[in-house]
Image (cartoon, rainbow, N blue to C red):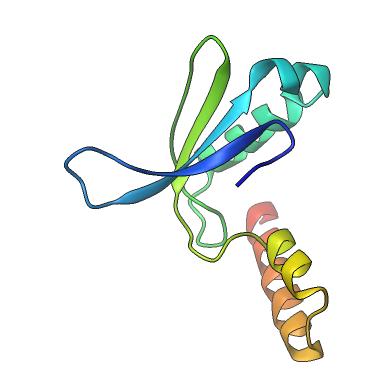
Length: 110
């Protein structure tokens, strides 16, 4: 998938059956959009988190052009993509999603 300043690709380590998501972010675009602090905060939260509500961060690295985050692959995509696809959610699904979001936020701030 594509984001504001990069893309996420599905990857597999050679010789391993495990699939991961690798987020590649263009450094220049992050600087131009004043997002360096947000990306650093995302990395810091994910690196310290041991939380079932957050994606697991396996490692980060960089080259001259990009920053990379290698994360647990969670099939099904993200909530924004799902909302754009469905347009609206039924009330019961909305209740479930809100309850899960509240639990996730609470667990991060606990």
